[in-house]
Length: 290
Ligand SMILES: *[C@@H]1O[C@H](CO)[C@@H](O)[C@H](O)[C@H]1NC(C)=O
Ligand SMILES: *[C@@H]1O[C@H](CO)[C@@H](O)[C@H](O)[C@H]1NC(C)=O
Ligand SMILES: *[C@@H]1O[C@H](CO)[C@@H](O)[C@H](O)[C@H]1NC(C)=O
Ligand SMILES: *[C@@H]1O[C@H](CO)[C@@H](O)[C@H](O)[C@H]1NC(C)=O
Image (tube, rainbow, N blue to C red; front, side, top):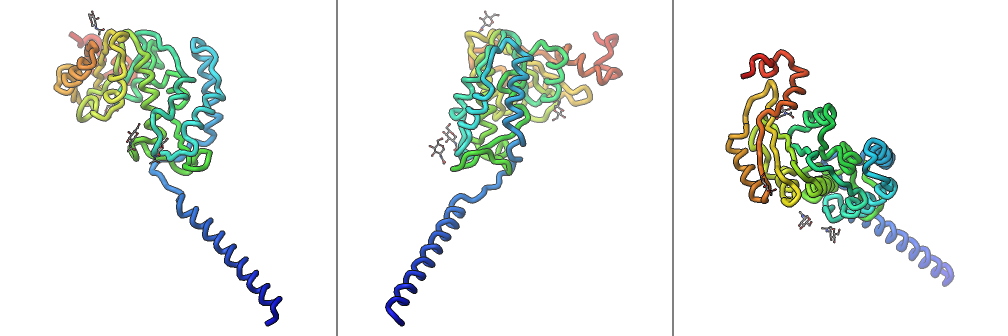
């Protein structure tokens, strides 16, 4: 073999080794950051357009909120979740988003809820006297949507996102915690709470947002009373009412937070709405009432 050919073979060999090393490095980086499959659905398609559209819509529905910078809202959402593990997102990450979406809540208008999702929103649509979390600016913007980012790279993950209970610091749960906290914190006067008297178990579960976030964040100097409405399904069982043990326990929890408490069984204006769909039910017959 000539010396020249020998040198060339060495060179070719070196190039082969180098490229195979590069390929290994690439494969290695794929192994280090596997595409993780979460249990929940991925980011809602067209998320950005939906949020910006809802932002302008909200300003037209509730002019009292004033001018909000809708693209800034999107910007702060991306700051909160991009390049982060969707199971390592805390309330702290959404702090800036919370600040740009801040809002004043009129006194006596707040209506919190637990396990009455459908009825409570039918009620606020029908009366317009109360505001639920989903009628606040943040709640309205993000209601029903899913989102999460990806570790390392920017952008949303459209394939899958952590489900509500998949990990404790996930992108959705932490968002709804801070949105609920802000709502409770800025509420004043009488704060109403619609609860489900027909549901199994405790009236407000230990891990519910109501207990873990909303009650602790209320300001006793601004909230004059927490007024619970215990609503039974018209055809459902009466599993809990104001004098049941679970309610007394909740009363104690509320009072421990230096808040005044009251409770109403089957608050009539809500029952009237239930009766629209069940006019023949005995609870709906005005004449049979004592
Ligand atoms: C979680 O996120 C914080 C900052 O947002 C970071 O400092 C921390 O290392 C992350 N933890 C994990 C386990 O990824
Ligand atoms: C109350 O809970 C029951 C049992 O979980 C459920 O079927 C019903 O829809 C709930 N009622 C309301 C008003 O959400
Ligand atoms: C969730 O975040 C909090 C900080 O807000 C941290 O103290 C806690 O350890 C985190 N939990 C998990 C399971 O990572
Ligand atoms: C509770 O109600 C009483 C009487 O209505 C009122 O004087 C008091 O200020 C209230 N307490 C709080 C913490 O708002």
